Length: 118
Image (cartoon, rainbow, N blue to C red; front, side):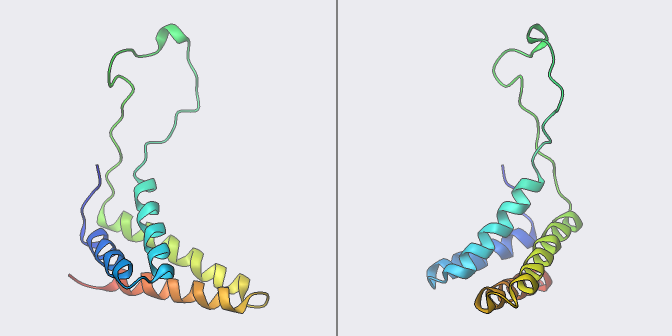
């Protein structure tokens, strides 16, 4: 199940446009951002292991509902992705300038989509 929010709708629309335009860099950036949002909804894995006889049985017995992110949570996840891209741009600046420019452009694209209003 995926959550439909204004931010995700903008990201999905932009992804569709980028795919139609065959813009591989933008497609990659948007897929990564959408995956980060999906991953943020994941249920944390329990680190403790119990006895086998205490394990739940039956269809769906081990299913857990995913987290539901608020709009503010989604923006925070996207902000973290933008910060990561900007940091990559700084890290590549001296050694691989073309990758630095690509990372900065990707951060700019995500920033614009974050700030758009529907």
